[in-house]
Image (cartoon, rainbow, N blue to C red):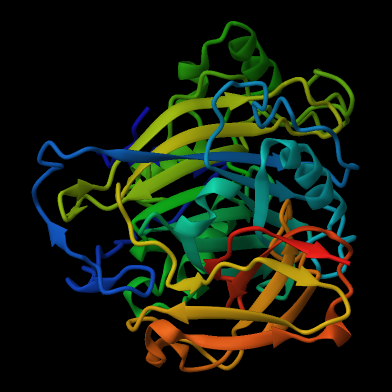
Length: 463
């Protein structure tokens, strides 16, 4: 279903005897500048009102999966990520909630490590991880599209205990994919059926507090594509557990959704205004007894609900005859998983991007080989419209690296290389740091935030 504003009466928002304040939040569609540099090149991104004009279209697959794992240990997510499919998406984004905080700051949280391991044989690279206590967002990209994704930033907003605790709130990762800016948000909003107002306030806090360095897209809603997932914790009003289960068993989801707090709040303009959600054709994903398919049998007898959701937003515009367009190919739950009181929910999107975007601004000249125990010279250049900084760096990676954090060794890049012309600059990986074992390697040029600006061809490290 595509949700939009419609007339709605205040009594529909009554919840156990008290009235939810009717406050309409208006999101401004702030126009972006008409001459936007893409990937630090001179190519511009200009708004227009026309369509594609018959030009070839290019879509990129972005697969989102959200799951409240209830502090369980990692399990195989092959089914949740649909890895048995013959065609896989270019991007995977996995948003988890209630994750044990067992990582060391390297991105090797046990869940992150487990997901990396199952995606490695499919040739995916972990490009970004953002966590906040129990909330974890992991982004993977196919190795083949690494030259076309850049400008990473991430943010986190705490909303638990009035902003002091990160068990609730949201984390985000924004990036440019084939020249289009995309932001992916994973949030865990306030719990309990009576706390609708707190959930709305949590959402507002994430929207209001997350800011980015790019003046053109300095907040969540400025991005070309906004993909939002998480344990949003919206419940079903008025119904008893027995009534909800009976409707679910009869697959009468349409009746249940008339009581869905998220849909009612969206229709009233209280939250996720102008966002869209696909048709819900799966049973409520909360709350199950652990290791069963039985809804809550505890003393609390919680009413089943669709707490776990995926929504999207995009601007009604186009750039250089490329329309912003989102196609949702599926919206599923995955009942096979029983280690949590929630079921995972996934959605596959195709988003339209530029068919021929510029490549990365840094080019490495061919490297014949590296030798252990000797200085090894490299030569690279940057386009004149690029920008290099003192804290950019060049990492030596195994050719089959699985994450941008998994460099073997590195050297600092040179500031101002964009002014050096085609000759570029020559640097050395000195023998003191050449401890890499023999094998196939490549070089990556990265910013301090791990945004990729260049990647070399592979070469051999020899004894």
